[in-house]
Image (cartoon, rainbow, N blue to C red; front, side, top):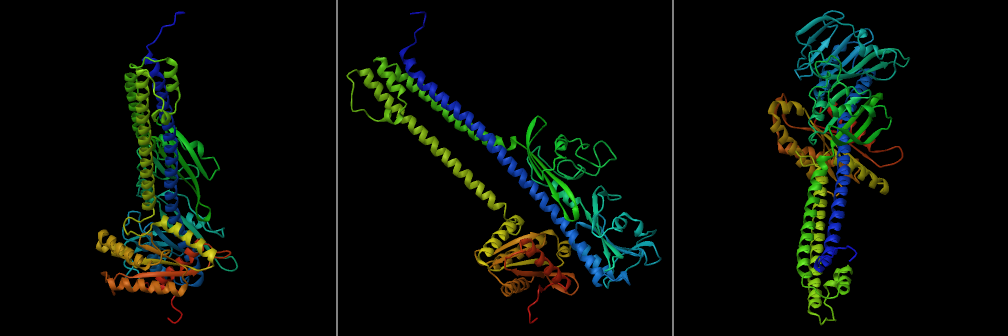
Length: 603
């Protein structure tokens, strides 16, 4: 009629169910794909931010240690610990400072009259030496080993004409009252970079007395960045504010550009599409840029931070991670759900087609039941039975179909809930693991920072003290060099175990602060209580008898502890708490090590 082709009744009955379920499968599939991309982008962005923070913490650790050492030597010149009448006496102090900081290449003391002495170590970690320009003849630079009694040994290098007043490290601060960073440059004879911090020492009248300087090897930072666990095609870098590279992952050396260039490596001349993609963002003053970069026919989530170091140093930290590395696992799970939905549609089509072939009743009755959309109502047995066998059978079959569909939906919801719970548990476990030091089992630096902030806020609300112990294993580098890294690692695990044993209360926390440094947070603890815990820790380590014979007169591994207890108040924060504890630790080491500072009042 009217040229319209008729279709079989069974097909007319089945088509609405198949179409609706197909539409539902399509909507769910598109929604899953969209949410997978959104979730992947968020995860990639969060991980890029976390990697950027790790690089920033590493950089700040190196820069702050150099700044603290420079400040300490400024004060040492003024109070006489670095003598001006005989600078040779400064050699043991300078050498000790150099040995305690593996990332430092020189510690320099230059007087206004041109006398110069420095503890120097090449970037390849060869044995350190003392460089001096007045030992044999004025302004003649020679190098000597430092003897055990603090005297200089026989000359091993030189002489060379050398006046520090003509060198950039000293000229840069001749007219300055504040410390200044030098330019980043390549070490002569080495494929690595370094920079120095110079600080003038002036008397009360403003006259220049001396200049102290500390050199920092950037190779340690480059190794840290290059060793980051990044997805394939991901990249992280550290650069100066104009794009000159200081460290990067996946590009080898960062001293010079690609293809034999004699220019310093930058984001523009490395030949890396990933680094070049950051170039348009260099002139944006936003301290933390986040978003999407497209290169290599792939989208990347990026994080670009401007970090401010001590004494006006401005650097950039950038991270770019491929979107696909985070989206693909989520999309894979979504596809599995979609296949289940497609199988459900196919099952409905087959079962519905078989049932529809048995139907010969009125179309209105059949279409009403099919169009109701109430699965629970269809699955519920009807009190009214039809005398038409086909309609009666249709109602029975529709009830069975609705029940099966409800069960499939219920099963799918349970599976989604189970997968969601598994993902939440995995995320929680990952979050916990990210706060634990893998070697010692104590909290890592991230866990320490959060725990200290929490303890400080709780103490501020209750007006109770917070105590902090900073601990450093004495001469641990020499122990490590003498006995090897496995023995050093075992010693760190032993100390970590002892430290955790001292953290008895729920709020106490033992943490590895960095290298051979540990920390213990003791909420609601005054100085006397903190000293008691520190004494217990020293005695426990002494009882373990971790033997050593690499230092004359020292028969076992010992520990120096600096402690402080503060009640939060105006002008006080966790940074000050750490600074004071670090100062006490430095005092403990300066007083001879294997001791607690401040000492007990009756000591």
